[in-house]
Image (cartoon, rainbow, N blue to C red; front, side, top):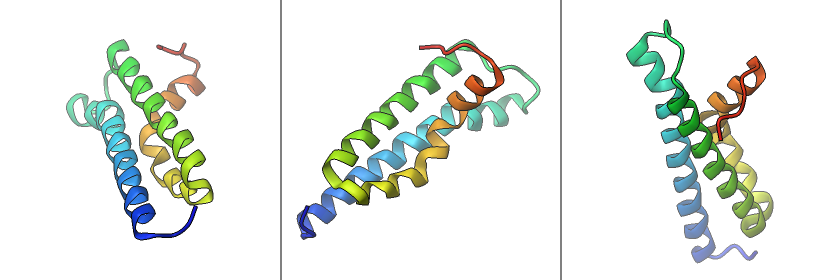
Length: 99
């Protein structure tokens, strides 16, 4: 893909959208849970389900950006920990996926 102002704006908009989705995923999961429950409670199944759906949206954005922006889309991986933290930790610890 040629580096034109139009492609730079498209990349900036896509990256901003991925950052927004990742921030929403973090707020719905670990952010809200740690602030409101002070880390002493177990997250509800609804929280885990919502985080998993937001993570799926982030993964879809990443895959689409890989096909559109090629190697430039690797910058999207900077936002991955925010979006994928809760679903991956729940899967690693031994829970079942809540899709």
